[in-house]
Every structure is written in structure tokens, then in C-alpha cells.
Amino acid sequence: MSAFVDPCEKCEEMMQPYLDRELSDEQMREAEAHLDTCSYCRRRYRFEVSLRRYVRTAAAAQMPPELKQRLSELRTPLH
Image (cartoon, rainbow, N blue to C red; front, side, top):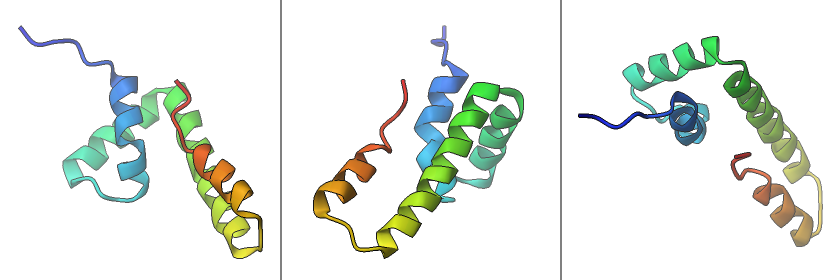
């Protein structure tokens, strides 16, 4: 008997590797299929994309190390 795996929990685990394109083709298709059907995870994905874009832009500007650390901490899961 196999244990139930929450698809949103699995999506959360796969989010960073998905964004970094570190998954196999099969895993990418699985993640994309879930994102196509789950509005919560789709919003989470869009947030991560926006956050990465903001961090890239902000990293180009001079900022105190404390602010860089706080931005880095924003990447923690929302759960």
C-alpha cells in the first residue's frame, strides 16, 4: 500500500528545481501539468518568478548586506 502524496506538497518541493530547469523532461511535464490545474501552485510559481526577477534587478544595485540577506530569506516556502 503506497502513501498518499499531496500534489501541492510535491510541487512545492519541485518549484526551485523547476525554475532552475534541473528536472528531467518527465518531471517538467508532471510539474507543468500540475501548474495547469492548480491555481494555488500557479500563483506560487508566478510569485517565485517575480521574486527572482526582483532579486536579479536589486542585486545589480548597491544595497546593504542585511537587505540582501532579507531578500534571500523571502525564498522560503509559503506553507
